[in-house]
Length: 98
Image 1 (spheres, rainbow, N blue to C red):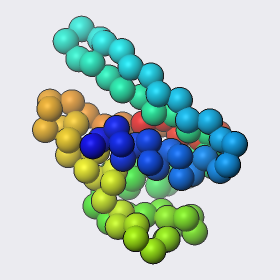
Image 2 (image 1 turned 60 degrees about the horizontal axis):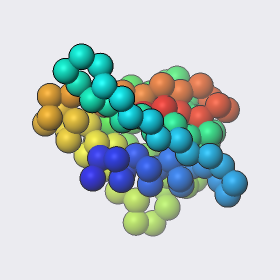
Image 3 (image 1 turned 135 degrees about the vertical axis):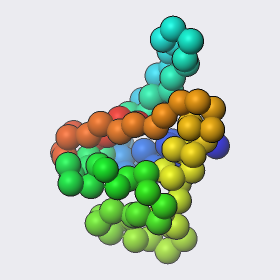
């Protein structure tokens, strides 16, 4: 479910013809999954909020009907439930990495 949520978000923000990359790996006793999009990125002041329940950002697409603002909160909850963590890196105009 966590990976599906990340992919859904990445596909939505990467306009037609955009690229979404998925990578996996292992560090010591942890495995990781990374989803990278080439969408508009996330403003620095919003990065601390993206995993909060019901937070949807300021983009018009975030306000679409049927969007609850729970997807990334669910990602964080699943990751933490398995002893991991959810993180985000982004530069506006250069996409985001979850």
